[in-house]
Length: 152
Image 1 (tube, rainbow, N blue to C red):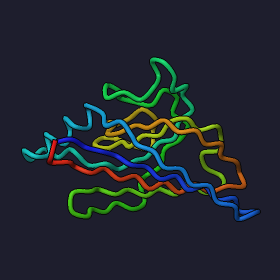
Image 2: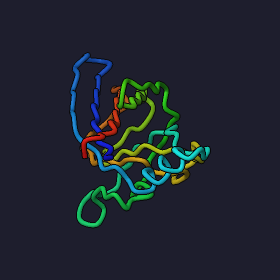
Image 3: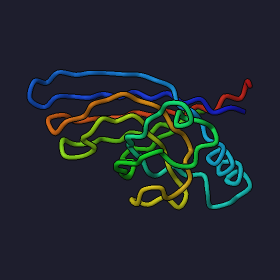
Image 4: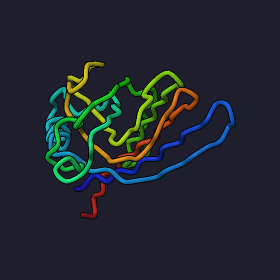
């Protein structure tokens, strides 16, 4: 089985109501796959609970890799507000208001297990490179889906 991830970023300017939408794919991380395997045998692991934004370089050795265990330079993290499952797809939604995550954002990650609001805690399930400039006049909604592909 393989886990495929898709990410939709929706940035809305609260002054002009202008909307920018970007879609991209993620890298599934080995540590997250190991956590999901442990869940299959009854371990209390394998649950995604936090979302992180980062400002790491994402070039050369910093580009997302299945071996990643944290973001290069985590800026902020927030507990995921909506988690659902439809058939073979887990879906996560997070909303950052105008006062959260303002910077040049270059990386995002899904964390779980023993993750907390503290940077670099927990297991990294997936990571993606992004290119988003977020200001204090903008909100950011992120929809991230992870599909378990049984045909691989």
